[in-house]
Length: 112
Length: 116
Image (tube, rainbow over all chains, first blue to last red; front, side):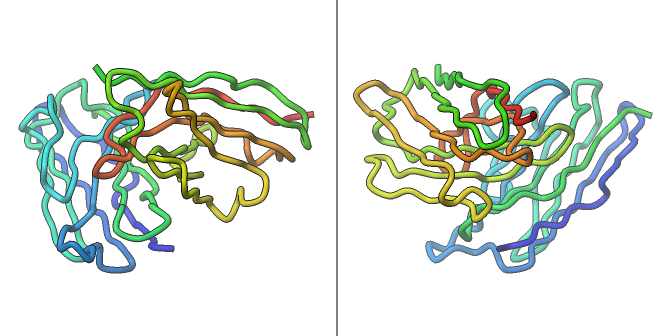
């Protein structure tokens, strides 16, 4: 199985400051169709996960533009330009290029 | 509006059985592959099982193979997960997830607790 490794696992951030989460995969996530299936999910306390970003950098509908994704191959990053209180929760990267789909361990974002 | 509503979670003894359901609405259910993903208390997310749009192919994580069975009834817009020989390590919130471009919609989850 493809191993997804996130860092850091805990991320204390001051309101209004930027935040960045790294995700590395044990194999390239480029699929045979040329797309790279790396996704980011947010799970707020007590809620289901919600997809934020798909195929590295595409924001889902309703996702604020302060969230952005980047990367290629095996190294990917989720950035929040200015953290707001509603961003508290756990963030997961997930690969959908290889079967079975696998998730990172999660990064817990909290407000300092 | 896409909605996925899970039900059937319960507390059961080790070795017991349970059937989870996921009722879908707001989209053409028969056009989409569907997955089950679980989350043990305080832990991360784990893929469990998947089924193609017409139900013709099914897939399982190694940890549940032979004990869990995924199925669907496209006439009822419903996804199922039949669980048997349950173990303590199956204790988790089980989410029904639509797989369009990788997990675009999630249900609210249903809790399965396996304990004596």
